[in-house]
Length: 450
Image 1 (cartoon, rainbow, N blue to C red):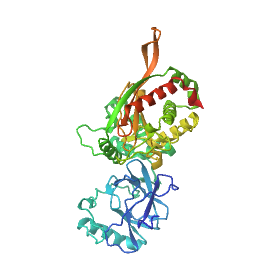
Image 2: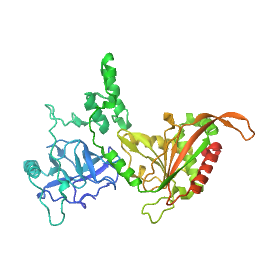
Image 3: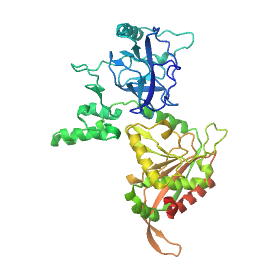
């Protein structure tokens, strides 16, 4: 596909070269290059991606590249992905340094076919950064699409190893872990990663820094490397979240709350927790079974003129990760048994925190859950994700004094749920009926284990 789209590279999820290419690039006209010097473009890693951030260059300038080899790690709005070369050659010139941002389709580096052409490619990159970009007759390049000025070159060791590698071996770490390591002056090569496949995450860097610091000074380390008084630009993920939230403001929404007794659910969870079942999976399963009976609550409206009764019940669940928020999706949650659902959920969370989710694992939700109960929150409202019909905010289960129908007073565990819905498609009676069904399933959860 890459050669059809006139690009030198194809992206895959990090450490997963079998993932199909998700690339949509346009031919840049900034450089008049020869046939043997190819431009490396910023790929489109998702349908919503407009720009990408260079997380790390796996290869250094002058390195020989083989077809299918990972060259650069790019941060999209939801995940980090390796970009692999589609040609043999040499990485002649890096035009966007680590941490730099470039529009989709713009050149980020030059690839030379032979070593003799490296100097020529470097000269072209230098001249392009110091002169106005020519505009071709086919495509007019917007003024704001000009390449950003090069960042100061990083200090390299005598062995000329690239900062993203150590003796030729790539250090795999999340972008936030790298930033934290820089702030805390931690050498990533000495940190042992606990994330999926050994990936270094923020907590690994914090733990290493705490272990290395003298005991009296440990308390003086700023939490999460935050520097007070500084202005911090949005990360790629935060920018995507911001755009989605602004889009959601155009949807007319309303909210309905409901109190659900959870004694039976709590008892079931205590009974099967040892088998790997999570409370998130139980809530997702209960929600999915209720949606089977109320398909309109599982519907969605995109164009403002029609809506879709979704054929699948895919429960998206909000998860906080380093630098943002993502909603991994439990697909066909009504059909999977609770044990399979729990295993799948743990797998999705691990991939989400390592920023390794594939697009279909986070953008196919038809109904969303947001649970803050584990933080002691008793109730809150959630913002509706664009294109979906409803999102349910789940508070914590709390012992509550309640009166029975016969006038007796007793204690019951109860939780508050609040559903935000698109009023163009879903009405108050629809939500009330759905919540009644959900309450019956949770208060008599025998169907959750079948």
